Image (cartoon, rainbow, N blue to C red; front, side):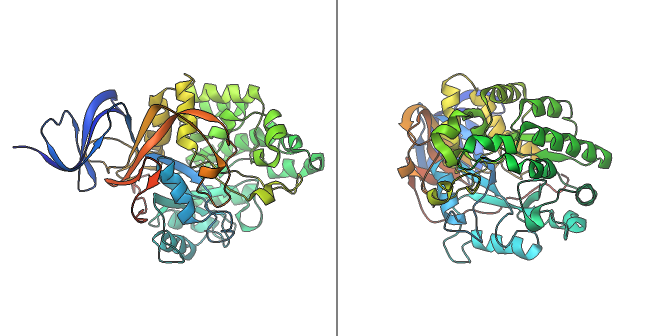
Length: 447
């Protein structure tokens, strides 16, 4: 009997846990139903992937879409539009909104907004939201982290203010005691940075690395690992920026997972600050080439588990304020895939490692149900890319409300041609198709 599918992706090179293989992908009822030579099989829709590579859907596990709060910079709808335009099928969104996502009610508010029940059409990509750890909720995080649509707990040990800052040992111990899933941490030492704020030179963005020096990150990560080991709890350390931390994390992989950002691999101080000024400012800072070299080693040797962007837009007017009044953060979700595929084209990164960092790793670390694998039985979240297509990244093409990218004018080789979510084509050749239909991720109960 001839097989029938809702969609067949024909003739592409599938890249998954088995490596690379020329194969067709059959999709039925939103799930991957077959991978292989499908011959005479019929389908309601066919995608010709000849000459293209078919990847498991890319997941950006760290974005700031600003809603509710300063939505003049970004919101859930525009952020998710940028995601699918860039080949990203889903995101984990951060809690430092206004008000913060630190209660069950605020988590539900975000889920309602993502579903289009508040203000706008909702999110185009799949999604989950972090609950922020605070002194007020530290003893109840074990309950909050299990709520539907929550990917886990996020704790700011530095670089935040108000309720979302937990810099003291007692607060961290309460968080670690409460959690059962893996919590994620922004690891910079608040006390050391406070002592060094006088080193900021007005209008000189190169002094950002003096205020937030390497030791601020190293001291904090050492302390966090020590406390997590005492509590016997698993942790995830976000946006590693120093070569020294790579060695520290590699020695503690039984307990700790960690993330690398494209920005820390691609941009280098002081030239990035001299060229981009406030646009290059983020936390932890862009550091020098020697640190980037150590981070690349962590990518290649398997120390890093996932890659996210820390997409955090601000308006150009805000970023042009003289340092240190300028805010930290830059857009990244839409340029994520082409930027890293360009590194693949240059031989710095294998395509298989890219897939591991952006799909398989997310599946392993968070236990996302039905996602992060291109395998029979999994949801048909798929990113199709053209490794030979050369394009120039441009401010004009960005969907984020702030309308810019730090990579404006950068020529890249490698481009996403299709974004599929739950078996639907939501982006094809730079066009968004259909209405926003993103859904919340589900997570394994045992993690």
